[in-house]
Image (cartoon, rainbow, N blue to C red; front, side, top):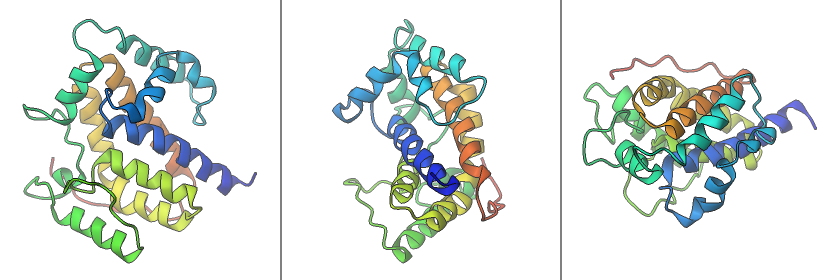
Length: 208
C-alpha cells in the first residue's frame, strides 16, 4: 500500500468515527455499534493513528460510560445543543467571523467551495455546514473517493485554521471524561492528517 493510499485510508476511518461522535447524539441508532466498541479500550489496537497517550485516552473514554455525575447523552446535549451557552462552539464561523456568528463569511466560503466541487449538502436541516462533525465526515468521504487534493483543500482552508482553538476550548470545558478524551483523540488524529499535506494551512485570524 502506498503512503498516499495509507493516509487516505486513515482519514476515511478516523474521520467517520470522530465526525459521528461530534455530530450524532449517543442515543442515535446510527452510532450504537460505535459506542459499544468504544466501551472496551481494546479498540486502540485497530486505531490507525498510534501515539503514547492513546491507551490513556481509551481508558478515559471507557470510564465516561460509567461516569456518575452526568450521562453521555446529557453531556452531549450540554456540549452541542444547549439550552445554555455551549462551552466550545462546534461551528467554524464562530471562530473565524468578527461577529462570532453562525452562517458567517467563512461558512459561505465553505459552501462556495462545496458547490465548485459538486459536493452536495445532504443534511436535512438548514444547519451550518461548518460543524466540526460534518467537516470530519466530509474529509472521510473525500478520502474514500481518493480525492487527495480536495482532502487537503478542505483541511487547509476550512478545518485546520480553527479546529485547534475549538479543541483547546472543548478539552478545557468538556467536564466529562469521555468528551475530554474525544477532544484529545481528535487533536492527535488531526496532527497526523496534517503531516502529509502539500497545501499550507491558511493563516486566518481567530475572533473567539
